[in-house]
Length: 113
Length: 115
Image 1 (cartoon, rainbow over the protein chains, first blue to last red):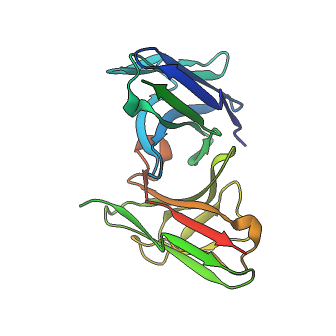
Image 2 (cartoon, chains in turn cyan, yellow; image 1 turned 120 degrees about the horizontal axis):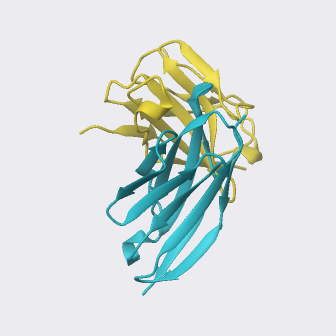
């Protein structure tokens, strides 16, 4: 099955700086890579996703890049703000079993004012 | 309002006492899933359902049962809970049969403690 590893587990950044979270996956057939944000005490919510036929996707201050050869994808948050403080989860799903979503262990991001 | 609901939100129980956590969605979604969230382990899928009467195991199904008798409901059943099932549980639903086609919407979570 799919194995998704996420690094770092915690990340502290100064407000206004950038944050980068990296995930690697094991299944070369994986074709969909969503990122979820979970604020303290809240449910996970999708913030951005990318499919295997695209190398990069941007949405305002967040972007995701995908390197299929190396089997890794990254979340980039620019100009971080206090409301970006949360736990971020990457995930992957395989074209061989499109009903299962495998998550990384999560990254706790703290934005210091 | 489109939403996924779970009940109860908090539950403290004892080892061996059967319990059910309910999940309901009002979006006419075909796909529903249960996850558990544990520190350092992220979200792990327990069971999922592609449609009424169609369910399958996720990555950590041991000790859990599910049923999908109606499209809107997907209860999680712990026949004989044990302390290692103490966790935060999330139900999620999606419009499509294929996870990658549509966003998964999560419920508010159920904090379960088994003593």
